[in-house]
Structure formats: C-alpha cells, structure tokens
Image (cartoon, rainbow, N blue to C red; front, side, top):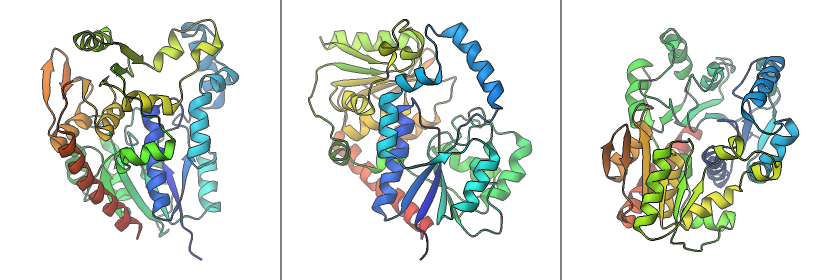
Length: 369
C-alpha cells in the first residue's frame, strides 16, 4: 500500500505563536485530505552543541535575570510545548544533516512540503539547502512542494552564487507557491520556476473551525488587544491611545517580555497558552499588532485592527494583505499603519478569503495528486 505520509519542513516550534498556528493549520488541512502529516523537528541552528552551549551561557550572563537552563526553558514554554505535543505530529529530533538524511532513508513519504513562513530567509535559516530539499536525491520521485513559502524580506537575502543551485533544486518541485505577491516574480525571474500565490495556512481554517477544534471561549471584550513581537515605545503608545479614545482598557500581550523583564521568579516568566492568545484576538474590540499572524487572525475572526510595520524591515507580507483584502494604508514616520480601528467590511473580507481559500486548497490537492 502506498504511504500517505507527508513530511513538512517549517520553522522550529517554540515560543512563536504564529509559527505554531501555521504548522497546526497545515497539518489539519492535510489530515482532512486523508494524509498523515509529520513536521520534521529540525532546529535552525546547526552549530556545534559546544558552541551553542557557550553562547547560551554568555546570553544568560548578559540578558537574563534567571538561569535559562533546559529545565527553565521547559517551565517557560510549558503551555506552548503542550499545544505542540497535543496538536502537531512531529518527527524525532533531527539535530544534524546526518540525522536528517537517515530519517529520510528510513521513513518513506508521499511528499515533502516546505513552508509556511520565512523558510527561505537566509538570515534565519543557516542550513538553507535543506529547505530547498537538497538532501533528497534527484532520482527520488517523491513529490516536492512549497506551500506559502516566504523569503521574509524584499529584496531577498539569498546569496547570488546560490541561484543556480536553487534553480536546479526548485525545478524538481511539482508545485511552488508563496505567501507574498512580490515573491512570485522573484521566483519566476531569478530562479526560472512557475509560482503561485496562496493564503497562509492559518487562513485555510475558518473562525468557526478554530473555535470548535480548539474549544475557544467567545466572551466579547471592550478592550484593545495589543500583540507585540518587538519592543518599541511607539507601538505601545498607539495601543494605549486607541484604548483611551474608546474609553476602555488595553491588554498587552508581548511574549518577549517573559524572557527579558520578568526577573526573579521563574513562574512569572511562563508564556501564556496558545488558546489564550487566540482568545485575546477573538474577543477584542480592536487589535494592535506588529505581527503578520496577528493580522491574519484579526481577519479570520473579523476584528478591526491596526498593523504597525517598520518600512525599513520589509512590508511585502503586509502589502499582500492590503491588495487582496482592500485594506487601508498610511505612512507615519518610519512606520506603515495598515487598516484602521474602525470596523471594515467583514462580509467582503470573509468572501474574498473563502475564494482564495478554495484556490489555495486546489493548489495543494493538485500538487499532492
């Protein structure tokens, strides 16, 4: 009997709420198609264990008020780790190129899927060859697919001398899709491969499905929900300003603070559950965020939002949402503000998302067939 297993290469699943949810969503969709998805447990950091340990000690001394040992990390990540353990099927840890190749040899698959998120961003992925599936021999007929892969920045940061190699590797893919519109022309022009734009995996699942699957509690709040990935006073000030204008409170959800500011008691550093993050968006009056997935779930849940984007860091992933969902955009200093705290046409956005969801699922089904 032919295997239905599908191996997925994506970001490591740790404290990144959006990364966890895109991995969850892609697996859910593949299960609905009657496949058996397995996310490969590959760390982005392939330096020697000794070097990683030494650098961790330096960071501990310089930045953390508590001992960031493996035990401490397990305590801090206990809720996100529980979600991953219960909801996402993973391989055994693959901590070297040798282990990855051995896993490939021992576990036949129907397909390998690369994506989603910034899996082709060289700065984040030092072993980038693996994410173009170089470890799979050319003679293997396993189906190679890129789903909603992202370069993360525009222009892309891949070394020009790697272009010929990656063009050859991409020519072996049966289907290539990307998350940003700008990446379509990059792949077709620089790597000479046909490419399709698709929705981020999180948008392949509806609001009603998320609520039912994850048992989310709907308790509408008047508060502004501020989900921040990076620390910038301007962002918090904007969130507080919106809360004041609406005569309500502001709930700040900033995972980075758990690592850098909580100090003394380890229990105070525990990251909230993934479900709590989703409920914060689901029940908010308005969302203020600097996160792509913060915007994605605002659209999925039909919530007014303001996305704060540093135009020096690349806005292509947000520009894609502006075009396809007809959102507002304005420039304010070094930042681009996407959408507004006023209710947008939720029905129109939902209709467009449903259309693109069908097209995205069709791409995936065709590539897997």
